[in-house]
Image (cartoon, rainbow, N blue to C red; front, side, top):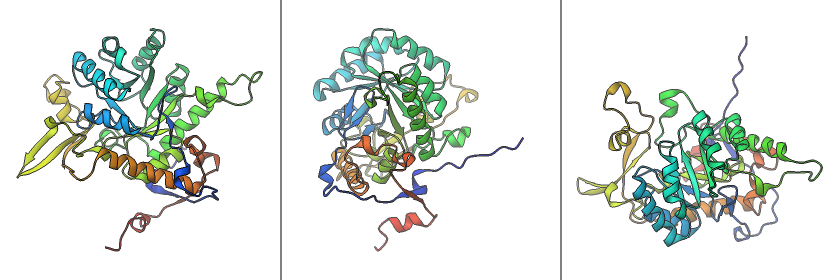
Length: 368
């Protein structure tokens, strides 16, 4: 039997071409987007639930500016409940991450202070994830629930049928992720995003009652959040063009003085550094005692590093840099809203070209 492998593309593999636009200023566009089925944010950027960037102060600040912070789960239930309360009291919004070890207890204790739950697992295409989602949707809790991580059309479609309210999508592109190297599992971001977009399109069509409506109601669909691989504003633009509602980021916030907690700052040779690590790194496995202490059972899929503390840049600076890049792109492309732009690569509303290996050099300032 002959096997044919599809070519898969990442953000750097393409550049977008401008459309005719009647937008005279980037101020005319609206970057409001879905973060889940029933919740919206002003800037399509979500802070990843990584313990070295997801602090109480970073979640509060991002929420207030218009993005969204996710409170990580690597703490006791009582501590997470208290932190969720602080975040919600000070910013009026809180997304709480949970795992599948103790989800019922965590939800019970944090439900008063959580607007969205964020299921933080490696593989969303798993029986225990589906079983939990079935339980949650019949439990009486009303908060939207985002499920991750997904990668294939099958995983997104199956979980959409089980009433997931959003997807933490992609496996492998995160800056501290080693899953592709360790396991061979993964897919470049642009193609991975297509799988989610296509799955949701198919799911929406399956929900249409042709006797009552001729097209899906976009308000009823779950969200797609691209997880990882976001380094520059152009990556955010291409994530939305390839079908996502927002992106989940860690690295762009790492090392910011208003993001990192004191416990994650170390001094080395007189200089201050921030820890930054993937949540499947050996540091995390050891710090939170996630294995039995034997090398046979120590398997990691994440890396860790130190990043110099950045004193002259804030969370606000990063969010607005990305948001303004997105607004400029939307004005080039002629879209006034994220919903108009989302998935345009696949509908023909956005044209693109393939890049050569040398094109990235040309795209950056190179005259210094």
